[in-house]
Amino acid sequence: MLNCGDTFLIDDEEGYERHLWIVITPPTEDEDEVVIVSITTLRQYSETLVKLHQGDHSFIKHESVIAYSHAMVVAVEYIETAIKNGTAERTDPVTAALLNRVQAGLVESDRTPNGVKYFYRSVMGV
Image 1 (cartoon, rainbow, N blue to C red):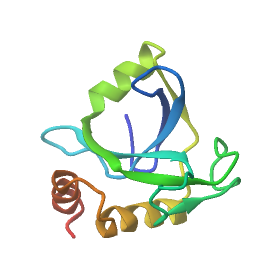
Image 2 (cartoon, rainbow, N blue to C red):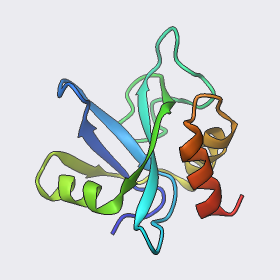
Image 3 (cartoon, one colour):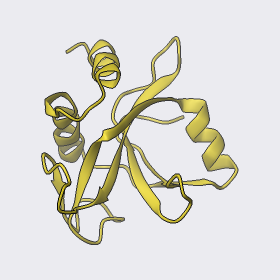
Image 4 (cartoon, one colour):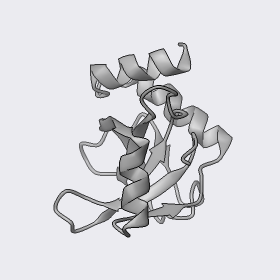
């Protein structure tokens, strides 16, 4: 079962590169869904609301950011199936401090999809 703060690697849409994703909500009881956010390499036009550096997580080797524009609500079953069939890989969970930064950024970011913000607020009671 996935928990808030768990992470996993999954191939990007083109299948060229694996990205680290963070589960930032606990699974809902009725739908069994979670909000996930992606970590990506810092680029010129990246949103820099939450920057990550080597040492923030074992997978991060250079300056990275949370890509809130890619945040989404997904079924826990989707992630667990991907892990079971090998298209995704579980990695170390994030620290509580990093999780708090990422969660705060989701609400603050102008790039977070509105539906994701709404779902996050309803699950987290904020």
